[in-house]
Image (cartoon, rainbow, N blue to C red; front, side, top):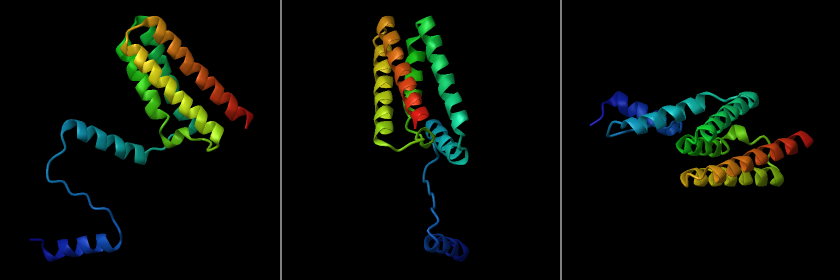
Length: 145
């Protein structure tokens, strides 16, 4: 079934605990994008400053969505902010208060996404204000530490 060199490589990988990825089917387009993003995430660690610039870019997109009543753009931005808050670069502190502030931020992004889904511009604007307020609270907490 396997040639002797292939068996040797597999045995060495096993003994050295090297992960081996085997796929019996090609990746579809979406799986390929996810795999590529995971590879990029592992290869690229953003500085805190760059990480915050990404966050600001997303919030600018949300503000643009609010100005144009583009609820899809708003919902996508809310989802991107939530995903960003789950990245390791987000966790600059591990105190209980910081973890609580992060959880509150994620909750506000969920409410923003839900408000965008309801296509209520006033509710969406208020939800965005809540997201912003949570950002400011967290930044104040970090500065005070």
